[in-house]
Amino acid sequence: MLVAVEYMGPMGVGVTTPQVFRADNHKLYVVKLQKNRMGAKVLVNEWLAARIGQMMELCFPPSDLIMISDRLLAGNKYRQVKGMAPGPHFACQYISSTRYVERYSLSKAINKEQMAGVILFDHLFHNWDRIWNRKNLLIRREKEGYRVYAIDNSHLFRRGVWNIESLRTLAGEIKVNHRRAYGMLLKHFLSARHFQPYVRKFEQITDEELAILVDDIPWEWLPREDEREALFLFLLTRRDMVKEIASRLCSLIPDVHRRTDTD
Image (cartoon, rainbow, N blue to C red):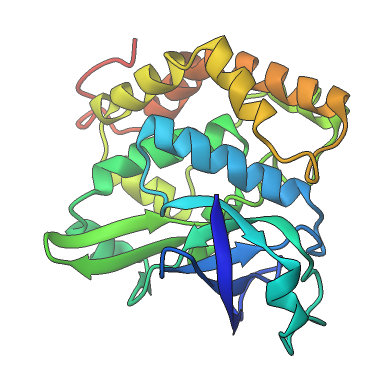
């Protein structure tokens, strides 16, 4: 877990009103606070995405829990910032010198094939916000070339805020969205073989690993045991559906690019 050592100010964008902190590793992080106006489940969503993103090797920036202490807030003139309170919050490493992705820049990205994993992830977790919000795909010029980063996973489960019944409804639902950047990727840059490694990675996550993932969610964010159980069951269901979801996505790829099956 990171420890916040300095408050830098508001990020300036986002419905969850993210704030920027410097952590004890000297890096800057965009922090979503427990008491944001959408509620603590947004942090649960971000935590799930960060952990599963690591397992699937997705192009999400490094993320972690961050502890904001009473001591830091005591001498801080920004204590009155809405949602600022001691406790564990969610931190995503700040990526500097980025631009929003558009078709020309995407064509130059050295890691655009990783977007197959991001598209699959978003369809596993009903994350349509990345399709409609162009600010959730960034690109940066690095030493090796242009690299795409997918950020902001607050709106998983369609709207970000969920309950037991909505998880049960969404668990077995397959909806394919191929608009904007995703449609461009499927049409011009991706083939079925690009999805295969991510299907395997998600399919190979064990029951125990998923249980640990849910158990590791801070209790301050998700205190109800029945909601944790519903979340675990959702994860099990989606894992068992990953091939079917990927197959539906790959059916949208023009035949010229559909070189291999996902099975």
